[in-house]
Image (cartoon, rainbow, N blue to C red; front, side, top):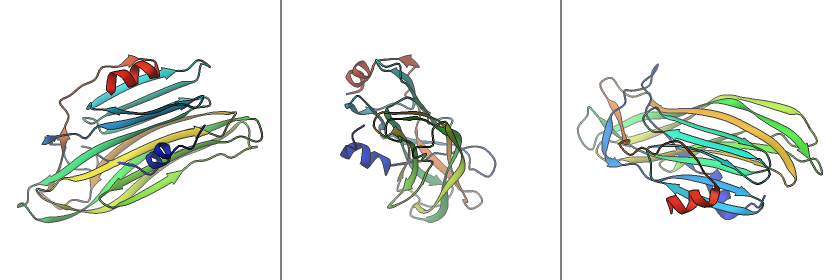
Length: 237
């Protein structure tokens, strides 16, 4: 699979969103629309990025070899998921835009962006000691934090669990939206096979009492569908 500039840039990308659970703040809707999220998919040296202007997205791609990739995200429930099987390069970057309410405009508010991940990566092996790789990145403002669950060859039949929470301290200014994002990316080395099954839940924590995080609008819904990569790109370009 080619290490193209877009895919490399994607691996360092971002995400985030509000979760109404535990010590996370209450969800509220901002008046601004969400930025377009990005689906990255490569197989047999063909593919690219598809920009998804939707608040909810769920799609499955099956290539000519039977390799399957399912990508989904939902701004309303603050989840993102990637299930990729085979020798593909696949990932999702969900973009969010946050503001805070409960304080005067211009007030600086310290908070923490979070991305909780659960799942596993499996290396089925391949030619020349092939490996299976997974990376996740959480970013906001000018900073970011990342993790990886890579299984290099010749560890055939090996599984690596993923159970971690990425955290990123940020300073938000009331009335000035903060762009944030999370990225999940799976790929194998050439002529290798494997899989990654990862679910993520993202949010904003550590806000002062009475302050809420406000997300971008989640009014646009895209239904579940099963598509070819070519038709998917034609739909969203």
